[in-house]
Length: 212
Image 1 (cartoon, rainbow, N blue to C red):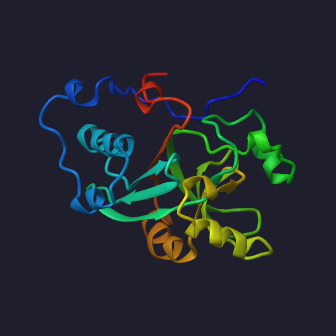
Image 2: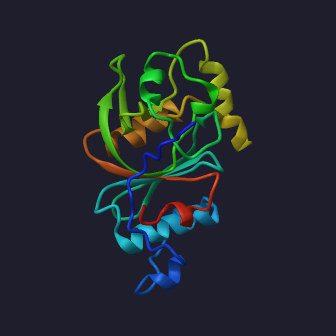
Image 3: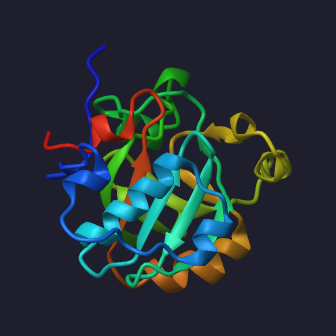
C-alpha cells in the first residue's frame, strides 16, 4: 500500500540540533523540565524556541511514544501537559483517502495512525457540530475532548492508564480529557492558528524533520 506523508516540510537543520544552531541554546521553561520529557521532546522544544519556527503562535508537541501532549504559549512557557489518546495503529503516515473512510466509519485498523510531522492547527467543528482543533482537515484529524457515549468509560480509564501503549485507541485523532480541552486547548487555540509537532515513533525525529 502506498502511504502519503501529510507533514509540512521543515527546513529543519536539526542535524545535530545544538551544533547546527548559531548562538546559545534556548532556555527551556522550568515547568516543562519538571515534566521529565523524553530527550526527543526536549530537543524538539529547544529547536522550536531557538529557530522561532512557530512564528509567535502557540505550539504543541505530541510525544507519541509517551502518549503525552505538551502545550506552549508563543513565549515558550508551558501552559499545561496531559496524557492523550492516539491512533491505535503504530505508524507515522496517513493513508491516501483516510479522511473519507474515517468520516464514513469504515477505517481498517492499519490506517488508524496519528501521522508525525509539523501541522498548522485551525479551530473548527466536526460533522456533529462539536468544537475541535483541526491539524489535518483532509485526513479528518483533530485535537478534541473525550466524547460521551458507549466507549466513554473505557477511554477515560485508558487516559488514566500508566502505560502509554494503553492509550493507543483512537482512529488517529489526539484525544484529551474534557477539562483539559475546555481550560487549555479551547482558550489557546479556539480562535487562532497554532502549530503542532507530532514526534515519530518508527524513525528518529531528526530524520523526519528535515527538508522533505
